[in-house]
Length: 550
Image (tube, rainbow, N blue to C red; front, side, top):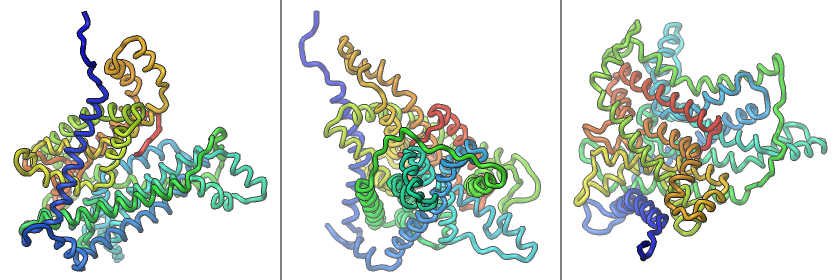
């Protein structure tokens, strides 16, 4: 006997649950942050004091100018480095191309502050290279300040431009360039008039990722800036000040950061929609075979840039085995730094992998459900989810951290300093990687398989679990590995949210560097580097060498 009554709409409740999650842990905290920015501890009621203070005090608005300067210059330098490498890698038989591609991705996956820390060990006041040159009477320019920040960002972030541009250049229909060649156009002119304009939307997408990442980064300017105050560091200082932080002003500064990044993203979207090209790519460009010295000429610059990009990981691994004490590194090798961190900082190591693992479970489940709704359940709910999922890319990690603290540091829900708020931050920040990867995979799947299952009487929920989820698994898994890599390397939000018992490896590295404990910092960074490399190799195996970045 079949019970009568209305059947439970599985996807309706999924939409309610997912949208509810994003509203509670993303939109509500950010709205609370905006609200707080219009209040002050000195003035009763609604006020614009914080914004007036920002735009009238040079100390504050100059930080915005420095942030924009760093981001714009970094975007330009990464374009100068990334676009030529993408062209050479996609058009010529570069020696060791597959390994170079992997190393370039590896340089992107490590946290920027490890790059800053490595450059300090090499070119800092007591750096290896600095001391080496000093012995022969050569004094190198300082690595600290704005030039150091730009240098670290350039070699850390150029892979964004490379990956987007090389993917687009590999899908150009070669008939376009052949037609230009038949009309008498030389190779350089074809590049400027045909190739680059066609791939310009992809170049712009890579550039916007560089701009937003450098604008939002906290670790690199904090470690290597030395007084060159940028907005994320100013937000941190205002909120975490030892002499009494101003949460209202920090909230206003956070809103300014988000406004800048949102404006740039909207401009990029507008530009791309006007300059978008659709090609069949039935005849992708052929790789040009070079030999001898000509092959060396195209390979050497690519290898040099790749080596500089991967150098921070090499430096931290090597230096983790060098003897050290509170005065710095000494002669000789040992594993004392590893013994120290496993005795003193084991909690940080355990927290990193436990929090990331729990977050990944939620990310995989939510990623599958959201991907399906966005691709298959088209409508207002799908569009809303797609918009909400991209919102974390507009919000810097430090701003998200402050938003969660402001929202959940009072009754009835107090989460500040707990593992729960750390995991929530990981899920919200890193979910887009899995959603985008799952959506791209699902778009290539024929929906007739699911339709056949439902037509045979299987419920939508069982169809999703037994059929769709299994077919989506490879795409979701590849995105989840990227989410995992970024989770274990997360610093910007963690440094705002951690408590005494919830500190992670990234936070520990930051605090150890500040304390001049470079040996233990190197050992901790090596753990992150090895974990990242292993995860990346698994990702490349699962995705068959295809890298998809949100």
